[in-house]
Image (cartoon, rainbow, N blue to C red; front, side, top):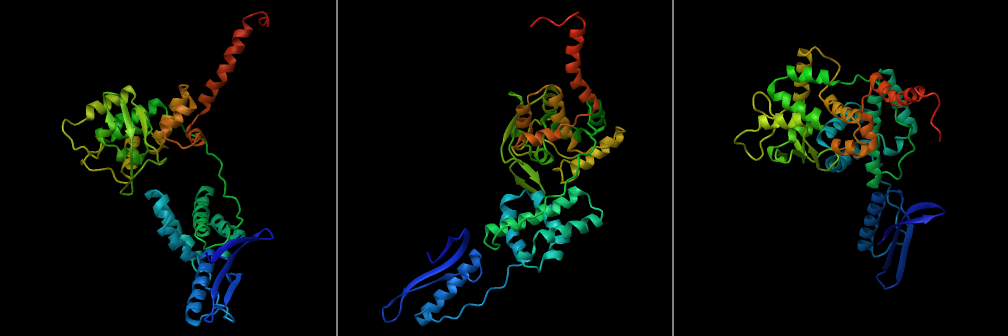
Length: 372
């Protein structure tokens, strides 16, 4: 191997090392640091030297190759879209990334070399986003996309090291408006029959919108009373669930009854469990739009279809379900995500405190605490 990475005085360097023989048979060795300390650049320089050696027969007094043009952000984005974006991101995530790249990041940074995207560049970008009135969560999305492109460029040898970057903008948690069972019942009563089943799958089994769209009748085992979540459909693409893991969810009595009533006598093995009133598959925004219409008819406001999943997690915690069980039922990769889904209000917190008050009340009934 004629290109390798060596450590020198605590610093890693790309080194070109070529052993060869001249036309008269004399052994020679050409060894030096690459002109540009990036893997791909060093490999390109090595190929130029080998081509020169094949033509001339020696590397003595070889002219130093011109340093290649620095890799621009636009070139890194092209590589990012062809590799990491395709292999690692869900379809809906790719849509969001492309919007953020095309609307802001490419127009601003496209022609700049990657080395120019440092802490100061990030800070200036964030200051402009603040001036435009964007919320911290929205600003953070641009930063996340930018970091992903740079990290992929480092892995590909297009950028030497990941720059030291400022922390992501932080946003405080907003006051929650938890959905109660009475709210859910009112919305379900106001929903169309086709939308109601989709809402029940989210509220009583915790399915994401993509998982509702991807659920097929073979995934429903009414005899065992379970659902198997195998796929998600987003932006017209079928993929694995968000966590990349399948999961099996026991049905509640209400959900079992709804699925039993909805099961067709004859259906294609791949027929979706829920469809629109026109018997078509739900579109990307169809479930949320149907939920908003039902919510308006029920004279409720402030929620989206995804809040049905929050209701599922919150209800499990309210009824003392173990945290690990809730995590597995929700299909979360880690417990901290599950905890963020629990929308507790003042009444929930008061009920929690009553667990302590109850012990105090029992002690007050006795003249003295029991002897240890």
